[in-house]
Image (cartoon, rainbow, N blue to C red; front, side):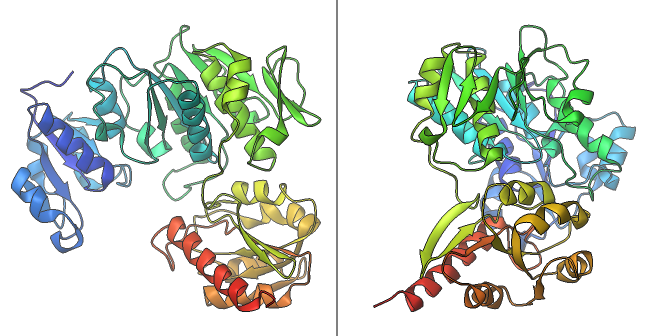
Length: 450
């Protein structure tokens, strides 16, 4: 419920900030908008200035006249204007929290967080619900923001949300009916003081749940088992091993869902143990609200893998290419390494997120034929694996892909799985992945047998 007499301010005019601004306007409140970037860097600045009071090029004390600040997820929480706001006891919330406060009571929320696999899992959940005939939306960190939909109007069955730790840092009353925690591995170390701070940020998704809500948890993760011991929600576990207390786990060539339902892996078009874990989490999330395991098992078939996540791009002369540009941390790369049963050539590197790449060494020794290193982290990676596996540093990204192909023999597999963010050379991981596919398609066209 929006308080009409409350003054709202919005920090950051990316997707979620703009969606929050227009949702508040729809509900009869005109917020004050503040953006660090100059006006010339905001594509829709002219329209925003017509619709709202705005400031660009920095956050000023005008924000301190507000009662509530909606903070975009990319803004560091230790920035000076937020420290001043805390001193004045101004309410700080995320766009996710705002969406929860205004949504209609009849819709149920399934929220997913974790270091890796969020987008695939929420897309699987959405696919299952749509296949079951449920009226649903997919929002949050994927697609449109939570506030970009008419969530205040009744009629939605389910809201499926992908949520990052940044968005969870500033929730207050947000309470999903089902909350999924896929994994907790080192990521965004440059944002949090310690790994524990990062883990507790993820676990924040459960803080308002009660015994009538459900937590879907990966029981193979010691971190998850440690940090969720005292949550109040009812728990449903999934595992990559056959464990009696897990409600979903793989056996031979199928996933066991509950006591009687078997889901053949051949029904899934996604590959790798990490994606089977994502599928188990998705099915359990739906099961918590719709306990029909056989129907859920049928509904999951036909799901297509998302782009940039071990996406098969094509092959030429017996050499195959996979685009895993979304692998922006070491745990994602480990999942990719475990998804192949023969040696691969891997393209790695990008902008540094503060991780230790040595955690990948033993897995890379088992499966990597050669690593091609590029981007800002290439020297750091070279120092990590020099003398352990074959390496080559190539500064130009396109040359790196071409060299991997030129070194390959029929039967080889080339995988882009960077273990890094993309910001040294690309706008985001999507742009990096699309460029990789462009280069691969050129290689295929130039080398396919006439």
